[in-house]
Image (cartoon, rainbow, N blue to C red; front, side, top):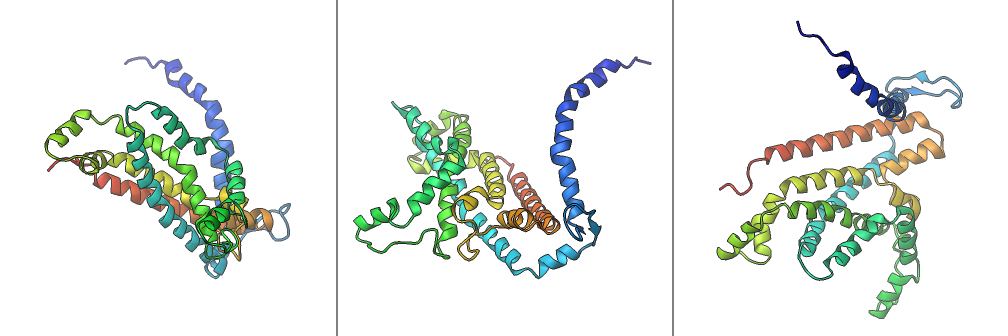
Amino acid sequence: MPKINISRVFVPYLFLFPALFLLALTVFFPALQAFYLSFARYEYDLTQIPQWVGLENFRRLWSDRLFWQTLRQTLLYLVCVVPVLVSLPLGLAILVDRQLRGIRWFRAAYYAPVAISMVVAGIAWKWLYSENGLLDRLLQLLGNNASIGWLTDPDLAIYSVMVVTVWKGLGYYMVIYLAGLQSIPKDLYEAASIDGSDGWRKHWDITVPLMRPYLMLVAIVSSISATKVFEEIFIMTQGGPRNSSKTIVYYIYERAFGHLDINYACAMALVLFLFVFSLSIANLALSRSQRRSPLKS
């Protein structure tokens, strides 16, 4: 019977232990605690032991109009932002995937917003959107003298914040696509040119099918990011005006830290987790169903 080398079995886990301990302390334990608190309630304040109340917090969610409004606005954010972040960065990646003089400067310019803190970006865009700000002045030069309430109009506020999310994410997803583009053999494009497929047509016939794994990756990552959007809204609108730009993550933050309604916030967070988990599973299932060679006739 062969001897078991104890050191070879346990030494790797000793190296992993510090990281696993920190992960358990900062991620797994808080997640389990939040799961428990979603089925409990503090009778008086946070210094008391929470009392088990079962599904009471979820019944409260069912009758909460603001919860359903924030959920709809989160879905609106998802539907509007994700298609743009899946398609537009691919076009940018194709444009900068060329051997031209100064092309690195263009890549750096497109990627620059990613390196900027969201706090700085939010403040800058809030200034651009302000009354008689730069955007209003540009529109005045085009003949529109009326000031537009980019962040004060309930019908425009959430879309104005979406622009910032798209602007901030373009460079990040462009780099992902750029890595995929540089792995495609150039011979395919030369063969396509001989067959008469040129210009954007060759990208539709070759680039898009071969970039499908990257498209699915960007779709999953951008979908999760869109459902968890918080910083832009916190900095620019605080969920207003009249809750028109409030998303579910901001509502969770507001209930937990603004009203100290921790248990109710944990119940909403659990619903959000299940939604994001289901969305990720659906995207993965779709990507697996499309794993066959896209160029196979």
